[in-house]
Image (cartoon, rainbow, N blue to C red; front, side, top):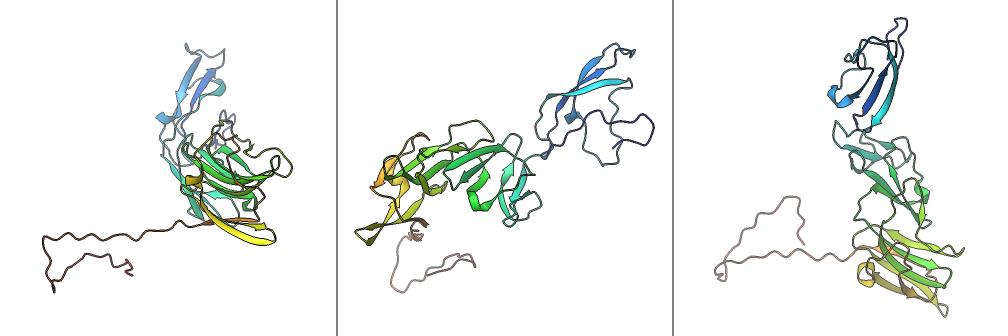
Length: 272
């Protein structure tokens, strides 16, 4: 980064994946002849240039110290972040599944199979293990987590729905009870989750279907929820909600037998 000239050295360095332009405090040496020996510099005043560029002159006097004063906002806008479904690594090269466009300060949200969740800042160096994840993506304060879980304390299968209320980052919060037998049987952030569940009753397999939104309202994240069964379910799986066929409305002034009607239909549309 510096030239090969004697005395060249790096005084301050930072990397910002989204081009955040921070404000630094520059302190000159006490022996310098400058009248103002401390001042701030905002990196957003500096255009992004090539790696070999010398950059702009900040001062001609000797510098004693450069320190971060204020974190800045992105100068290049939100970046699209993808996750590689094989390696679990994040990238902005378009490899894998799109997680969303992240701007400065926006967070990631992870939902785990063990009944915990976590929020973190965007870290492009982090690697995720899909064996322990139910969901990873961009955090939205309006996210609702829907869960079917077995409470070991009461010996009941419960359903709960909640929004994230915690603010601490890089910490996994459990939304299950601390009993050793408590288990998460199903978890999702889908807006209208519906499940098919199975249980054994007197050695007979019983099945049922449930719309979680209709079964329980959104409550606090520590609430147990509503009882679904007096025993632990053997299986809970997601089912797609029924899709109502789109109705094609035609309101002509008057139709007679034998009249023809023309419709504009996209060539990709399948008609059944």
